[in-house]
Structure formats: C-alpha cells, structure tokens
Image (cartoon, rainbow, N blue to C red; front, side):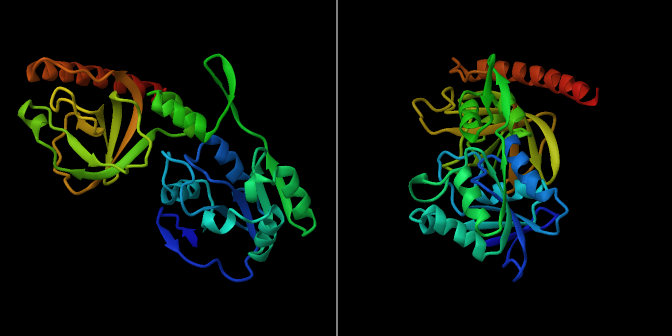
Amino acid sequence: MNYYMHESGKLWQTEIPKDTAIAVALGCFDGVHIGHKALIDEVAGSDDGLVSAIWTFSEPLTTPYIEKVEDRIKLCSRYGVKFAICESFERFKQMSPEEFVSHLEKINVKRIACGEDFRFGHNRAGDAAMLQAECAKRGIAVTVIPSVYTELDGERQKVSSTLIRSLICEGRVDVAARLLGRPFSVSGVVVSGNNLGRTIQVPTLNQRLEPCRIMPKNGVYNTVCVVNGNKYPSITNVGTRPTVIAGSHEKNCETHIIGEKLDIYGEIASVEFYNYVREEKKFDSLDKLREQITKDIEQSVKFFEKYREKSNG
C-alpha cells in the first residue's frame, strides 16, 4: 500500500512509478516528533535524484497511539517526503533481517535512513549495524541518525514516542509540544451533547474521539480549536463531567470557544492543547460550575495574550 503526499496535504493511494529509485526513512513514526524529523530530513533534504519516502506499518503497533497512521503520513509530508510505503505487520513479523533487506532491494530502495536504536526482522533480531552490513552487500547506502535528546526534569532524556505518550498522560502537554514540534491535538466530529453548557451561558462542543487515541489526564486545558482552517482560543475539559453525570467513567472532551458562537455540528474540529490549567472537580451546583468556568475563561484570555506577545517578540 503506497501513498503519494500532495502538497495540499491530501493523500492519494497510488503505486510508486516503476524503476523509481527511492531514499527511504524507516520507522513507525508515532507522533512524528523532532527525532523523527531528523530522520526524515536525511532522505527529504538531499539532492541525489532519489525520490523520498517513509517505510512504515499500515496499522499502529502500540495503543494508545499519538497519531493514527494516515495522520502520521500527512505530518511526514510537511517535512518534504513524497511517498509513504505502508505494509502490514503480519506480513513482516516472521521475516528474517536478511529477508527484510531483500524486500527493500526489490522495491528499488537505494538509500536508507534509520535511527540508532532501529530494530527489524523476526524477534527484532536485526539492528542498525546489521542493516548497514546487509545493505552494503546490495549496494544500498545506510545512514544511521543519532537519537535526539532533551533536558527534562533536570535530566538528559531521549526524545521518543514512549516519553511523549507519558507526558501527555500526565497532562504535561506543553512539554509534549516541545518534543513533538507542535501542540498535541485531537480531532473528531462535533456531536450534540446534553446542551447543558448553553443553559449556563457557556456553550461547548463535544467531539466523537477515536477510542485508541491517547488523551491527556482529566482536567481543564488552555486550547486552540481549529475548524475549517480557522483557529479560535478555547478552554477544554477532559474527563467524566462529575458535576453533571454522577458516577460516569466515560471520558469526554468538551471545548468552549472563547468569544464565538459557532454552529459546527457535524464538522471535524481539531483541538490543540497548550497547557494544563486545573484538575477536574465536582461542584455543588451548576452556579458554582459556571463561576469556575468564568474564571477559567478569564485566565485563558490572559494566557493567550501572553502567548501572542511571546510569539511576536
């Protein structure tokens, strides 16, 4: 299964033209973080005449995942990759490392970029050194890209999808954004809720979210809601809405767009998480809930004023 990444961000399922020589970055690319960008830059930024591509699996191997495969491909395209070669894990999980390299040779791969901790083949028997040795026999160049590190909590830590998932689960979405190179976001169709927000003069939009997608810990966040290409400052509550629904365990994501009244039911909205504000609480009354949401909105307005000043400075 191959995809061509159009500059508009659309994906076209297509075959890579026959006899096309390929430079490929290997990986799962969950999150497409700054470490992945270093890998992609190696194949997308060269002028050797090869067509740039990523080679990845057609399904997520880890759940909850940061990005579904289609969105991973779109994110990779932002960094200049032209094709995505997506193959089923079931087809490759029993392959020996040598068989895997032979497969890459058959699809006309001429140059490879992989991370220094890249593993492949049955039982993850192959590593970057073995990939270099096997590819050398076939005239395929391999560049091993060093891991990217960051300072976090006073320690030097490797940027990885595992680390980013942990940060998101802890509500540290601002730190996760630094490692992703963009705000963590969730997308989904806007659906009708119980309309309680309207009764307390704070309308919210509810989204139908993917069940296997990672979500931040319960709480209130400063966010930006993106609808039809337009961005709106907002606040988002992630949680079970204990003031409204007692004893519920169903996780919900509802967002109030500040200063706007939009009729966007049925539209796809993306919510970008900027920082954690407070924990989710059960209030004694709807009036107390409305008072708190008013305070949340006031702090959010101040937050985005400072954010814009910092961005423009």
